[in-house]
Amino acid sequence: MNAPDPVSLTSEAPQTDAALRRVLRADLLDFTADPGFALPQEATGVRWRPDHLVLIEDGHIHAVQPADQPVPAGWQSVPQEDHGGRLLMPGFIDTHVHCPQLDVIASFGTALLDWLNTYTFPAEKRYADPEVSQQGAQRFLSALWAHGTTSAVVFPTVHKVSAQALFEAAHAQGMRLITGKVLMDRHAPDGLRDDVVQAERDCIDLIDRWHNQGRQAFAVTVRFAPTSTPAQLAMAGLLCQTYPGTYMQTHVAENQDEIRWVAELFPDARSYLDVYDRDGLLGPRAVLAHGIWLDANDRAVLRERGAQIAHCPSSNLFLGSGLFDWAQAQREGVAVSLASDVGGGTSLSMLRNMQDAYKIQAMLGNRLTAWKALHAATLGAAQALGLSHEIGQIEPGHMADLAVWDWAHGPVAEHRDRLARDSHASLHERAFVWMTLGDERNLVETLIRGQTVFQSPL
Ligand SMILES: [Zn+2]
Image (cartoon, rainbow, N blue to C red; front, side, top):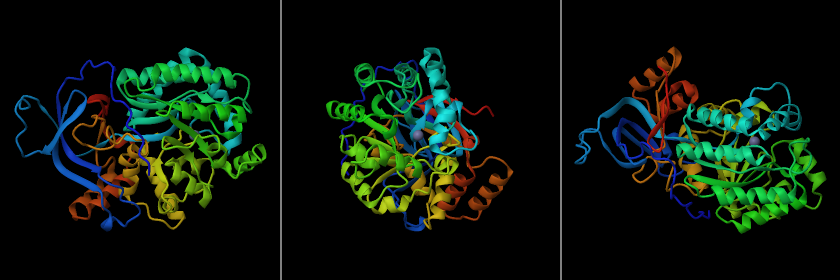
């Protein structure tokens, strides 16, 4: 797979406490390679470092070492934050989520196209108001942190101000965020349509202002093929070519009615995916949500372009969209990351989405290990986004974007975890129990650039 060039790390984010040194003590879990769909006992790439220290300085991971070894000179005076017996992981990366849709999460009774018209579009209209956009962005980012997610690829609304608000809020915290104003110039209600000329101008303004500004990156954001005219899709493809460091995000092959509609609107395209490919929208920085109903030709195109599928398990189940065959995508060399797709998805918790992902694969006769799921939400996503030099691992030089977790929350999980631990079951058994029974209530603390952005009230 083609690895994109690293995004610049020059940062002008506020650094109030960035020089502060911190030392965290916990059991570290991260990945050095893709465990794939190998059985747990055969999986490689799992890195388990029990009772280790993570030394943080200037927002970065300075060193990682066993807790029983002396810390380097100059670090003795830094008090250890003792999370002994807890799990410390890289912050999760959510590769597809809609900021304004916190307003419509858990809406009853529709599939994709009705759901957009009934719930989503009315909610998104309100984001034309800068104050609504700013409050929405702050609420949304705080919610991500409260679920252990430290990086995200985000859809705002069609309004430039909604992207601006997200960039500002993420930049203020030094959070890695990828977003861009949504492009939609047809098949959307009044107040939610742009036009080609104005949309291009807004995108270029946002690129000039925000792309590679600190940890912000711009994504050319096509809502989905039906809401853009061919002229707008061509403009979007041109933006991707003109600004090669930018990302591209959209939806593809989520729902059967949607696919039939795309076929009517674009009769010349070989497939839904081809609508994007023929305008040059697919490259190593392209993130396509869902991809449930792609064929082998489409998967070959994704592999060749180095584009990734953002698999959205809870959304696919909630909207009744279908069962994404992750193992097949893996066999055919397509990069797959994990995403919440809130508000089609029912939780920002990547753990809850992993639980749904496991059940979807079970329906398809596949076995999703905790290793594969956790890798996809950390190192796997970081690599697919070309950001593995910065996020996704607990590694010296990486940003200190971390989450501390309790192994269990509540009597049932505590009982089950104790059995797994005391019976000396495999580490995978314990991790799988955690993934399957855990959620945001297990989260103890979230750090971005070494600064606490969420702390459990307990
Ligand atoms: Zn979506």
